[in-house]
Image 1: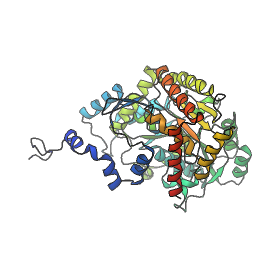
Image 2: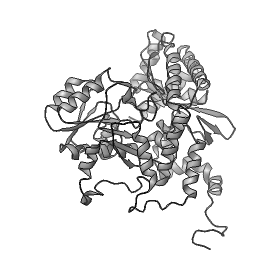
Image 3: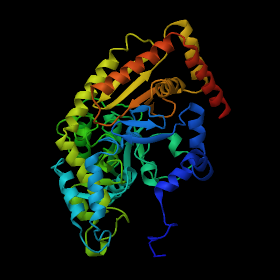
Image 4: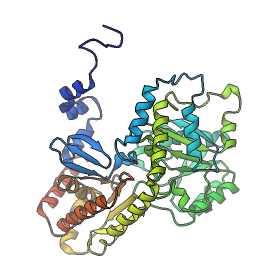
Length: 468
């Protein structure tokens, strides 16, 4: 038998392995990974078996299609298995490049950095890591070192990642509980310029990190907030970090969400998710020249911040292919047009359904918020769910969207009555029609007292009470 197993019947065969063991997927996960995930999926009826995927769709073993309105939490910006991205990965593997030698300079990282920076002409350099949370960690480190200050400000309800540094600027206690002590960072309310200035006057703030549109709940700051925050930060010699991990790469109808507000030029920008093409994890921190030159101030500091798999050839090839697709197929313009269409059609339903309170967002990042109804019958059912656990009604909507209409969505966060739509940026009017039709049917059932739906609500209540 050769060292690579070729010529041997016992060599590794991925197709055979999946055929033999693929049916054990939920049991394997329960036994060896996060055991609560399969438990949750079984409880809400999300324990599907998807056989393949392409674009904005999955298919099960029976050949039924499922519309993906989640995009892997925003990762699948250009859809699943895009042929241009696939070809780029085949090409880079076939090239047998001398990758990750650690002591040379390959062309692909420089080419991807050059392309990324073309969308942010006020920035100069890029650090490549492996994820969104790592991009944020890089920005936090660079901001602290460049300013010589210890503290970073962030917004209440923000989400910037789950590793220790990014967790320190995570605005949700549910993620932070039990992991203290964290870094001495400070939360302010989204849009509160007075709170921002009050903290800046203390003189120890390195930076303010902010999502231009918060992923949790899909909340935008007031108009002009980012620009005015930038002015305050510059006055106090602190940096602005834009976390575009979810909102960037076209998601909101501009290449970056901060670009919706003119005059905003962040000192550091974090991107990831859609840049990967859904294949090879990649994160990028874009920044100003003086920041990078301060961090890497001498040859002695050449490796003061690095990532073992950062700048790997497969990730760089995927990123270049994604940006090519974005331009060639005018994906950003499509996200803006299709997002406006979807949001407008959903917003028109607010006056029709008393359980539906708001539809908001930009591009293809849309929040659908539910709230307390006025009629007595619906109010009593709503109260039953709220007494058990806030957020159960939104979950109750998500389940029939999948089970009856084969549309994958999810709630926007724990204890929130908000569904967040972040589909692949390539969807069009056909997908808008399908989603609006299905959502309308679910709302009709909820307001008409559909027994199956509210019976499932009682099941969720029992589960919530049992988990207390």
